[in-house]
Image: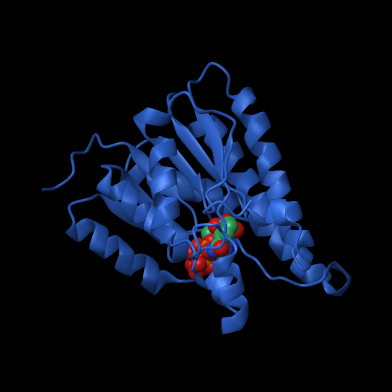
Amino acid sequence: MDQANNAKVAIVTGASRGIGAAVAQRLAQDGFAVAVNYASSPAQADALVASLQAGGARAIAVKADVSDAGEVRRMFEIAEQQLGKVDVLVNNAGVLKTVPLADTSDALFDQTFGINVRGTFNTLREAAARLNDGGRIVNFSSTTLALNMPGYAVYNATKAAVESFTHVFAKELRGRNITVNAVAPGPIATSLFLDGKTEEQIQAFAKMPPLQRLGQPDDIAGVVSFLVGPDAGWVNGQILRANGGVA
Ligand code: NAP
């Protein structure tokens, strides 16, 4: 059955693939109209939108590099024009390249901070002005922040910044009935985690949590669904570490 025009509206950044795509799918199932943001995978974003629409949801694909403030502003404008005023923002877009700090180039540092930190900052700043009262924001940190593994210095620093944004922004939105939380996944089987690792390294990560497996995108989509849903109305300014018990 086709979704009503008064469905709540969610923007999911970086939703063409991986965890973001699973979140977009889950929020559509939950009854949200969904803006599927992507930067460089239009075919995957379009295919996801087509499947959401086939399931009866209202969905659009919106190209925007989250590290660019102008593109983020346009993304919100397009979502508002085509779906309605935004209720939920899921700041999922992110990149990871594990390199020892000493070998990290200026370009990699700028790209990682540009997407993970400035990207989250850009969407939060836009959301402050545009989100409906009663809305929900979910940022993305990472369990790697607690593990302090070699190679993760710059990535972890970006996620530490995201956690700070989460705690402070939750307080700055006082009076709007908007919650701001973050989810901090452990290893999830997506290209961000799998690319560049040997089978042996992947198995070592899979054995780390007491639940003895890698997480799947749906494990995190369920957590985001909870945080943006009615049962999490009293959860605010928190970091939810969804990682099978690894840390
Ligand atoms: P992924 O499979 O590599 O997907 C990344 C997504 O981000 C893609 O849809 C990509 O879209 C999008 N993206 C990249 N740069 C972008 C930009 N500048 N603007 C807009 N979108 C952009 O990654 P993932 O594993 O799903 O990770 C999602 C989030 O979870 C990230 O914040 C990551 O740090 C976090 N996380 C992941 C894990 C894990 O083990 N996988 C663990 C902890 C935390 P395009 O292809 O269109 O560029």
